Image (cartoon, rainbow, N blue to C red; front, side, top):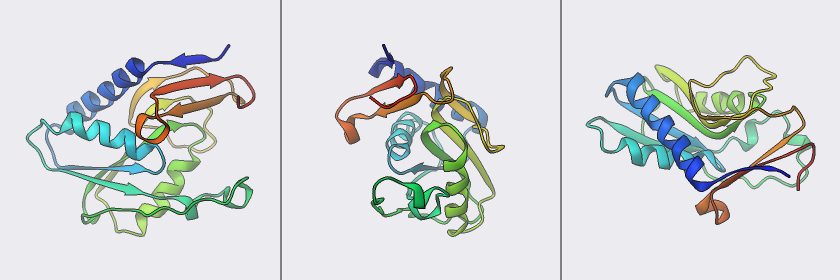
Length: 176
């Protein structure tokens, strides 16, 4: 039977992310950039929790489809979606946000894509779920939920706006 995290578990993870960002950045201006296709929804939720702070907050969305190193191995033709970064990257404190961190390759691709927009002063990484098993020396700065998984497990994140429900399922060795 797969491990399942509820909407309440996920909301608590988003709260932990927002609180950790709030504490570490101490009111300084930041820009949250969500990685399409679920990192952008997680970033919006974190932004909502940080909006009560008296600070400058920017929000953007980054599509990394053309920067992935597994592009030719995708089973489906990827849908290229638009990036939307309506503020200057140059000199900004960027926090890249994604739903799950696994091997580190998505963040590597996001860093490559981000560099096409300019040179930030600082880039950090926030993830709703850290499941371990890195292949690259990339670690998140902020983590909402840490899951202990096996290398071949599948972590399936569903989000309300994208999928109609908030839940996380961990399935052993194969997708459901």
